[in-house]
Image (tube, rainbow, N blue to C red; front, side):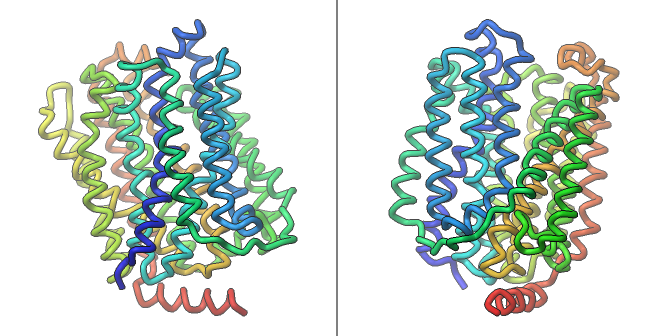
Length: 474
């Protein structure tokens, strides 16, 4: 069954809005030195421009399932994009660093909902038989954002004021708003659906504290990192206990993890996000710290990775719908593993041709794993279960990515003999430290083979989807 014109149009609209919010995560990183000079403040303070966005972005994700059911996916998506754009304009006009950090929180609250709500819209429109191809569409901004961000950020900073790092979101956002208002399907809201306030009070702060702890631990494991990480983990655990008691009324229905197909897909997604998003930290650092590349040069050098992902995703999507996610994801893991192992052999003199080839292979693996495994999870959900299932999967990806980034950053620092600061890591110039970190990344990627073996075959997915649909209709 082909993707019809309506699905492709919906995909284009959702990708346009999603790409803006995902790009914003990486595009601002390039502006850190410029922001420090503009506001006359320390790098530590400026780092909160990124941290505040990331924490707000992640903490609002659990709310998206309930909001989508209560108000309708189209309304929530439009409102999220408006909030994100208002935050972008305000950040661009910020008179002080304090105001800028505050407006970044507003940006994050809007941006965090755009991706999961967009996934829900496409999943409900496509149905289980076309889930692989649809998820390959929504995967474009997720995998290209980290590649394009440094390129755009470097170009903007070089040509215009830092304020355009934020203003650039506005014209794209306006186009996405107009298109979404006309083209996204309306959904009937569930009036009277109550918000799980206790669950929200546990899960959103829990995620924010845990991610802050992991982010801080990536530089140094100190008391604030331990307290924040442990407190966040406790709050998340308390939410799980609370959700078991509330069942389907909870903010996230943890009972979905009792369904084998969903649990296997979620576990595969967790390990892959842990390994691959953590490895994505190493690639730009290698270019910048070992090869002395600028942020713009690094972005251009990483294009091969994005190209590989872009080439693999449509093929992987079609194969997922035809033969099931298990074989596709297993093959993608092997490819990603091969590309990562190639990076365990690099040094300060490795040719750029060899690095580009390895990056292309890593990208092919990325494009063949994350989204097909998500498609397997969506394929066993009924239409009614999709919003909260989407929230659960996005929470898993954010948490796993944060853990993976922290773990590989610590491995890199320990192998380099650094004291935890970027400056000391630059002075060390020990390319062998990257070899060690990439071996750890490769081991984590190989670990993903275990849950991937439990992914359902195509027939099992179809049967699970029928059962879920019948259960949701009952």
